[in-house]
Length: 170
Image (cartoon, rainbow, N blue to C red; front, side, top):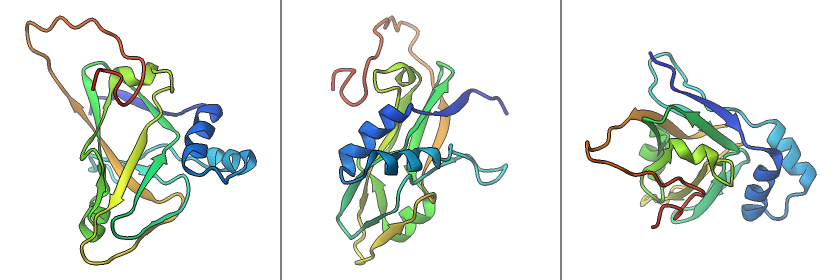
């Protein structure tokens, strides 16, 4: 297997901004403990394609509820690669857990963005069976799979990214 990427934590300041956006009641000390305990994504087995992303805090989602998760993670990867994000298979199967953008796409140049390439996940419990989902801190909730991509032979894009959602014009 070819190594093409490496996961890192974002800075504490960037993580704090992300956490306070969704959990403003937490103190800076609470966020520091959370930051210190962040786990970088890992594969569960040598045959696993997906790198599990772990919840930085516990959360519960009733059917139809949505939450934005600041993972505290960024990824540096070779330029011909993309990281595709999906719910963990078991959570999708049992609870219809879904990423709100269906598949998260992390481009290689996102690492250099103003927000340090901080990976967020906005997820919804789309259960139609009235199942409430609880994910404990430190448990995997999302997985990322690296995929190589190509471009057209007449591609001449030279624009550089500086931001996340909407930074490339949409």
